[in-house]
Amino acid sequence: GDSVTQMEGPVTLSEEAFLTINCTYTATGYPSLFWYVQYPGEGLQLLLKATKADDKGSNKGFEATYRKETTSFHLEKGSVQVSDSAVYFCALRYYNTDKLIFGTGTRLQVFP
Amino acid sequence: EAQVTQNPRYLITVTGKKLTVTCSQNMNHEYMSWYRQDPGLGLRQIYYSMNVEVTDKGDVPEGYKVSRKEKRNFPLILESPSPNQTSLYFCASSSFGGGRGDTQYFGPGTRLTVL
Image 1 (cartoon, one colour):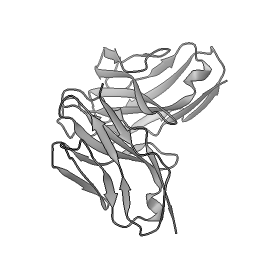
Image 2 (cartoon, helix red, strand yellow):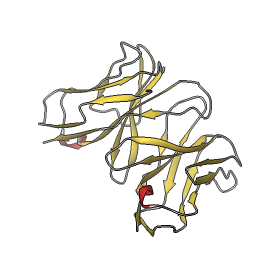
Image 3 (tube, rainbow over the protein chains, first blue to last red):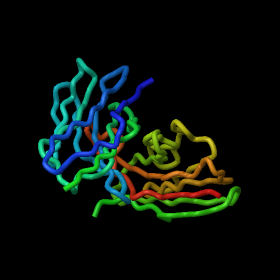
Image 4 (cartoon, one colour):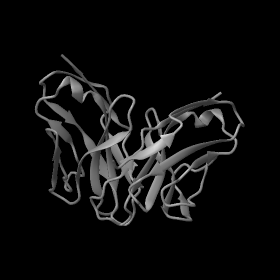
């Protein structure tokens, strides 16, 4: 079945370091891809999205490119801040259904 | 302000005592859904609804019920809770069929502990 695989966490970085969180997916069709972020004690917020191959989603300095050839949607940020500490979820969704299939989440911890 | 609200935010209960977690959205969304979040498993869909009086099972529906009598509300019912239903629960909503990039909005979560 369809699935999303994320790198295990926690990812621990110093402020201003470069961030990559890997995400790969398995899908029979052509889903839309999303990154959601969950700050401590809060619900999920959409961080960015891409709806077709080669699309790049971006928001708040984060970027991810929909790579159909490698079935990947890796999240990157050039310079992380302490305020970026959160759990990040990669997810996919098909056009004809609103169901989201999530990865297991990756916790990011950024230290000053 | 567009939002999804859930109540209660925290609940501790005992095995077998029926409970309801409410969910409400103010965006006139057709689609609503319940997820549970467990460590190492991410979020898994419990039930979803595509419109009033239209509901269907997600990936982990056992032990749960839902109803959709009004467009804005989508309560989650645990008729006889068990300890394996201890989890963090999220309600979500979106405009169904709104396009490939349509956003799902999530509530703040309900942390349930069943003793």
